[in-house]
Image: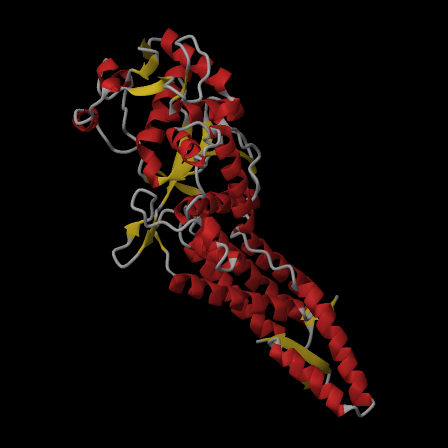
Length: 473
């Protein structure tokens, strides 16, 4: 595995590049988390799952990943929700942070190493802005602080936009704030406080941070001036990530992130419209989890390549559920044979190269920009191989253990864990023993009753010359 090369599509350069970490066997990774004013929709969840898969795979390949995902708990939308619910902005944020954590736990998303909140980093944000002003990258105006966008070379490169593109868009904006700016395309680092809004004291008066400065401060504070991977949804390329680059590199004089990764949208309906709150065509994850199998939803999100659009429908979810059931059955049928395993079985060692081929093909797929769509095909092939192998009367211990190891590790990269097999196996084995005893006692009614009850649960018994075997339908 060591000689293989991970390639990542870098949005900044618009090409696949060999991944080279800043430090050997370590990855610094920052993901833009939610603005916590409502339950997240499944488009937001797709981003969280996509980068969870990438994190898991990098760990599988031997990297220690320092994974940071923030909570934006200071924002206009949170303030508006606080007015609507008649509670404080802090209470709004805490309520939906708790809901977010509960929902992504249901999707088996690993906890980040750090989950900083904007509200906990105000002194660092103020210090960051003061530094930009001192270096002539920013200026004060009416209690606000703005970034000199035009001064930053290659501004807009991440989103493939030019200053002229931005100027044309900015010229259409109106409002008091626009009159304060030296240039229409400048963006806010600090916003002067408005009546009845949360605020913090600063050298420029009472106010609160602009959206973009928050992530720059939290990322550099925890991970350093330059990080390996910065990720988020495609909609964050501009202006959010574009502005992060400008203000971070203006302050530090160093590249902010070496690799920029952006996941595709979730689309719905016949016209494949992007799911978003603004279009009012969204389904909240919280609502959906009450109706569907979380594991099937996680599987659907994981097996679509992260840069591709994910077409969501109940039909696509059902298909994912069916395929996941097939994998579960292959796993169960295989693991239930563990009592048949023999420690030494030299003639069976020819199967080890076959496992190595599966492993190589899986890694080749995932090393190619984390292509889970191709990797899951290898997983399906391994499942078929396991189904065939499980029918054999004698298993080799080393092959058995290596097969289970590969299968479970690959599933775990996708966020899927099958935990019930061992306890179920013990229960079924006990019932088989009861059935065998009933047959010895010529209590065929009881024996048949056990068989029928197991059949109702999808478990088929097969009486062979080496004893009773069983499998799940």
